[in-house]
Image (cartoon, rainbow, N blue to C red; front, side, top):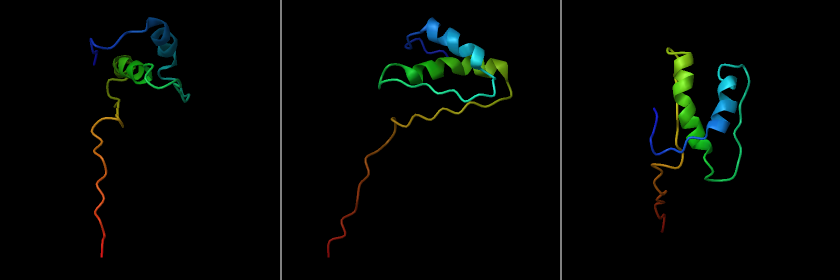
Length: 75
């Protein structure tokens, strides 16, 4: 799922790749909009290559969220 619009960061990817398949929780932290989700998207292919029968689920919480419309309960 390589996206040509994503800026590749080899230093970070090289540090994360050895952790793929390890029984260890990985947490990426950082300020907003610095590329955490992009790194995860770029790791989807190596994860799928390691276990072709495995499944990768990506949920983008910030897209397709419609504003909540509340109905007025006026008397």
